[in-house]
Length: 292
Image 1 (tube, one colour):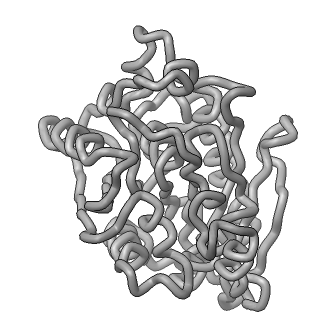
Image 2 (cartoon, rainbow, N blue to C red):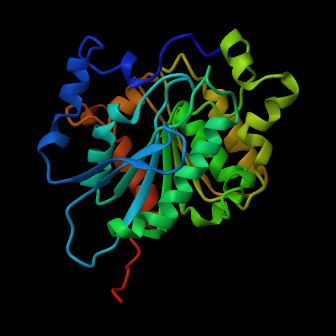
């Protein structure tokens, strides 16, 4: 599979002429909403290991489900500062959302950015209760390279084990347009994931054993950057070992539109947020938490 040499981060997509104006419009609701946003919380010792927490209004003593979202950008680009619209979208559904920055190529190669993801999830599990989040209702989602990171954290147990945890802390994973199983052909991606004998370690299918948290895999039919074979291979592997997986293909959506559909004025393009929320609800997000 070839992944085109384009920036798949929001800098290449959002939304109005791919400018800062477009990002400003997309993220405008967060500036005026009653979502409580705490920015630049350290989840590690490196300067890039920072995350933002979005907390919707809720009654005192109420505990909320939590989503850790990893943005895309070809493992090379992107910033959490571009994605308040994602935190706001999940907040409207009643979730606390954590959006973390992570290291990128060429400063690092695989698997450093996945290790950063594990640290961000571990921080969330151990500290989100301070924001009235429920660590027992913890979900991961991501788009593109971020979906790849989230899927590896869900499937390859060694990442969270390095943080003293296991994927069993996760209720479910929802991936948007993830490159879960491909062989790099372009120079940048060969450099990121090589040498070739290392490729199985970056393919999510390598680690599927059937006991992983449930996965929801979503893809846009007009996606020319990440092929449907990535989703199909992962679904096939999960089904072979009798794991839990659901999938959906959206007509007339390309790679970028899969995440931009979470923007407040583009939600009518596809019910992606509703579908993710429905999946999470069926896998523990709506569990009743009794106050102590």
